[in-house]
Amino acid sequence: MTQQSLSKWLKGIIIGIAVCGIIIYGGLLPMFGRDLAAENPEFAHWYYPWLAVLWISAIPCYLVLWNGWKITTEIARDNSFSMENAHYLKRICMLALADSAYFFIANLALLFLNMNHPSILLASLFVDFAGVVVAVTAAGLSHLVLKAAAIQQENELTI
Image 1 (cartoon, one colour):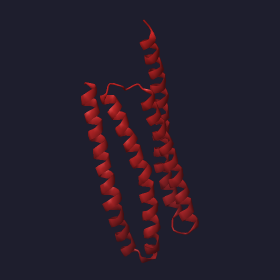
Image 2 (tube, helix red, strand yellow):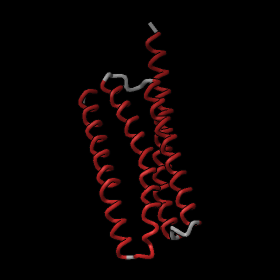
Image 3 (spheres, one colour):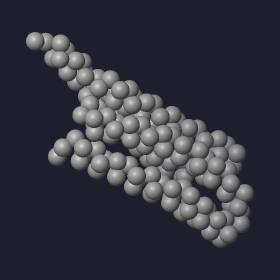
Image 4 (cartoon, helix red, strand yellow):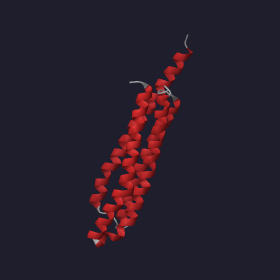
């Protein structure tokens, strides 16, 4: 597989994830939330705070996709192991950690405001764990890409 075709595949995957996110965040979550509020009027006052929390959590996700797009652009230029890609991966790590921390703190805040159930908080820990896994993976890849870029740069200077 060439760098160009790999880049095209990765960009297609990023676009697919972005479209799925728009469908989920823009359509499914509000629809399911309205249905839940209609079926359980005692939860109706939870709808907008939860929707705001979920929509805000989408911002770092789309920033991660943007950084992934930049990485695929570097791959297309046959510049896979570069300082830029290491920087983008580190930024993805920080965004994933920030989003996980935000989601956990928002869940706690909603619990203390009596707009959340403890079982929802426990279930959200799986989402937080997934975010931490993404962050650790991105940090590891960033480290490896940084080392590979340094070795590549050293080899270019060797005659």
